[in-house]
Image 1 (tube, chains in turn cyan, blue):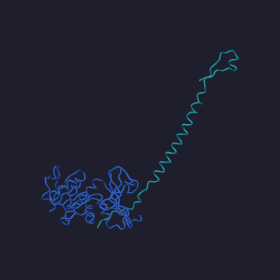
Image 2 (cartoon, chains in turn blue, red):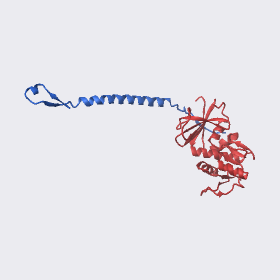
Image 3 (cartoon, helix red, strand yellow):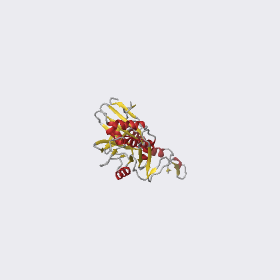
Image 4 (cartoon, chains in turn orange, brown):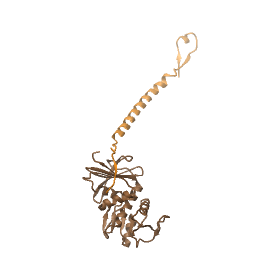
Amino acid sequence: MGRVCHGPIAARGASAAVIPASPTLAPMNRIKPLLVAGAIAAAVISFIRLRLTEDQPVDPGGWKPVDPA
Amino acid sequence: MSRLVVAVEGEVTMRAAQSLVVHPGVDQVALLAPAKSVHFPTVTSPVGWDLVIGSERAAGAGRKHGIPVAVTGTLDDQPGIFLGSPVGLALALAVGVDMVETIALAQPGEASGDSTVVFPSPIDARTAIVEHHDGHDIQVARGQGNLAAVMVMGSDRHRVVLDDNSFLTGIALAAAAVVGLDSEPGTAMPVWTRSADYLQTAVSMGLVIGERSAAA
């Protein structure tokens, strides 16, 4: 989207000119919240995975083969 | 002469036959028809043989012809040795362990239950349900994979057997058959009434019993 210019350019007798919108500002504004949401989701998943592996008990070992007799 | 007939009902009974045919205390092993194998002769009746081995089919054949049996399940008013299975192996392991706190069994299958039993790696922690066998509470933990384990935890020591499920289960039955060969005629008994002979036979067939102090 452009905008109509009524400033000095118009005053010099030129017909209403259309200036193109900045190509960088609008997409950055859309990506930022996505990046923040993604980072939060990754942190939550990492936390849950860590908790699940922490709670898993492990056999302490120390087994030795024996003769039943 | 000890002559055994195996009523094949799947991989476990076939593996039991393979363990028995190479056992020094066994002279001859045959399969009960209609099972066929290039390694074993087939018989249509167990009459004239010493013991019928297997599960329900073996119990039926033994009852019909008045021949003692060695079976994976339990017996009703029929001579033979019963619970030649991971459950019987677990209860045999428990004999001689002081103040048994846990008898547990890991088997392939669908996981269920809300209590947790920790087996040696690579089975590790599994949820378990309590099953009652012959008056005993056994924690049965099913899960993915082909491994099985029986584990007994007492106040002084812990004992475990861990192996491939078919191998372990086949030997649990085959060892029962060997013990059943010289049992008192006309009686029915579970494998753990002769736990020392039963475990010794299972070890001679390839199972390994692991033990550790309860303080470990």
